[in-house]
Image (cartoon, rainbow, N blue to C red; front, top):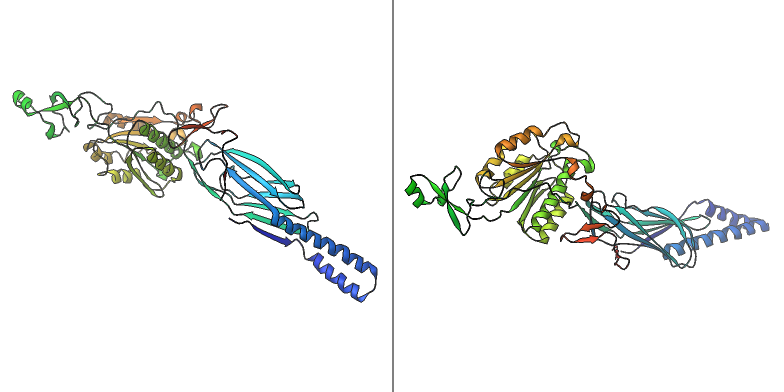
Length: 431
């Protein structure tokens, strides 16, 4: 995009004085009036010419290494101030109007004629979201300060900062299977290719799996069992209800829930699972389960833009009812401890979905509600669950970009690359 420059006079006093001196020199033959007119007029003319020369020849260029980042990554920018004029700029103020927290570069410097000055700025990305880098403005003037020069570079780029992907060794996801199962087991009652035997009928078993010869022989219902069962899809349900959240900023239940969702999605995709995401923020996020790197990027992008709303978890569970495949693993991430959403899980349980509840303890995040009573109810129902406290994500190994002298980040494809790239790495200009 083209630069826009503007030269304005700081004061109208000097032009008015020149007019008065010109009038006086015509009325009076006094040489002093002409001397003052020549001196002040020459200074005004030279200052104006100086200012216009800087306006036309002074430029700034911004570059960055990456078009996206994760929370905790170090963003590197390079600024180049180029003066192609024959005249120096005694002072130049650079104003950066980026909205990425901590990325603004505002400074005052000077530059000689036909000179380029370059410097780099690095800052940690501490907040997820979509941000804009740029535009950039330059402010300078002539040496006498008679004219103000403003040069604006309207170029800007969008930077997506995604939530970090962190290791979660303590969290296990209950695999999809028959009602109430929390672990994979041999001889499961699922549709596979090889039957291994029969067992007595239990409530919830499908009649199509009844083994009639054994039933007739023992005068009691028996169903077939199988050696193994297929792995169900993962549905990650993230509770974004503002009324149940606790904590502030990056130490809130919402931000920890976003990190949990991103990290679990990455784990599932690495294991070959089809992973989906549902969240009811300001906009409904609905990503049906899929495999591959494209799904990983879609999930990270959706989580980066996610904002809390006032829709309860019950509504989100109701949306997924009838749309999730039988035998899916439901991963519920919520700080809601009143348990009003438990009954809405029953239809999903009846159709063979298996939930894993990641219960963010509001009391540990500074809230008033305690999660222990609900945790006991989940245990009574036989629902696999984990109680999440802030220390799970406050460990050094869960801090991207802060792992010692060598810093790395994880790309959407799951590849770890250095945050500090080599000097020969290409810079990407603004456009």
